[in-house]
Amino acid sequence: MKLISLHLPKTAGSSFRTTLEEVFGERLLCDYGDRSISKPPVQRHREVLSSALAVAEQGVEAHDCIHGHFLPVKYLPLADSEPCTFITWMRHPVERLISHYHYWQQTYDPMLSAPHHKRVIEEKWSLEQFCLSQQFRNIYTQYLWGFPQSNFSFVGITEHYSEDMDYFSQNVLKHPVNKHTVNVTGGGQAREQLPPSIQEAVERFHAADMQLYEQALRRRAKRHHIN
Image (tube, rainbow, N blue to C red; front, side, top):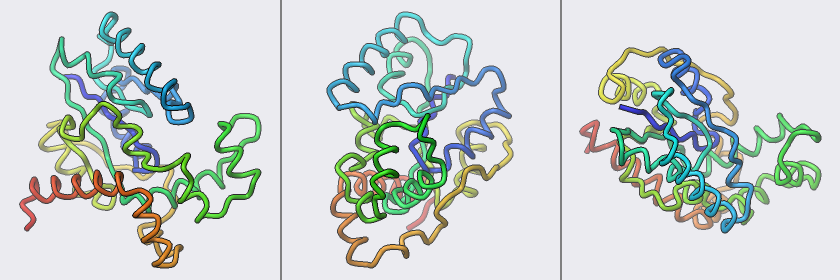
């Protein structure tokens, strides 16, 4: 079985990667080079389809796990030739946006940061402006282009990280793991930084992502037998 792990931004993916590094060692491939979401959709989709063809032809035989920021359709062709398990983690979209905003405030590098990161910092965007920006609208939906959530064997919920890690370890990976906390920003009550009326506006603006998150919550409730 090959594990394909999509790291959606600010959903505990760095903590999860540390665990995967311990489990897989050199058999882990970290794929963070595409920067797909920073590109216009037509370019992004053209490039990922080209990458998918390359993966279909060349494979990734030296690795048992792939983890990173990529459109998962890139690795879908692998499932035609070998067993693959696709997984990811999701977080309440408003919490995720707030965490992303503060992370960018803390990590800006004028020489290295992507153009959209540079714009947010140098134009001094407010949190509300960031959350209601077309550039960052429905990030989950953008990543899952051509890849329905049902293709994932496991979708963890960041707000239930410890419990869902236990489930992942026992039922998906079938291997004991250590839990780590890496790169954490914007605590569990981050939504309190926005007035309720703005929170509601942000949820409406990111309605597609809210639907994906709520679908993931229902899947979690089903696997944990929660009524």
